[in-house]
Length: 133
Image (tube, rainbow, N blue to C red; front, side):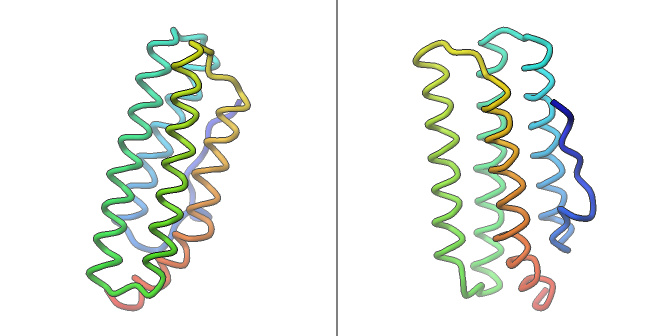
C-alpha cells in the first residue's frame, strides 16, 4: 500500500482544519506502514486507537467551529462524524475480538473513510468557514 499524501486537493481552505487533516493523514500512514511491516497485533491496535482518538479530537474541533460560525448543516455533519466513528470502532472491535490482523482491505476502508469525508462534508464546511472567518 502506498502512503496517503496530503496535498492541495485535500485542503478545505481553513488552516486549522487542514493542520488537523495533515495529522490524521500522518497517523493513517503510520498504521499503513505498520501493516506492511507486519507489526504485532498489539502495535496495530494501539495505532488504530491513536487514529480514532485523533479523529475524535478533530471532529470535536470542527464541531466547535461549526457552532461558533453558525454552520447551517451542523446536524448533518455531526451525524456523519458519528457514523464514521461508529464504523471505525466496529472495525477496531472486530480486530480486537477475533485477534485478527489488520489487512489491506481495512486500510483501504480507512483511507476511503478519511478522504471521502474531507472531499465532501469538510469541503462544504471549509467553504462556509472561509466566508465567515
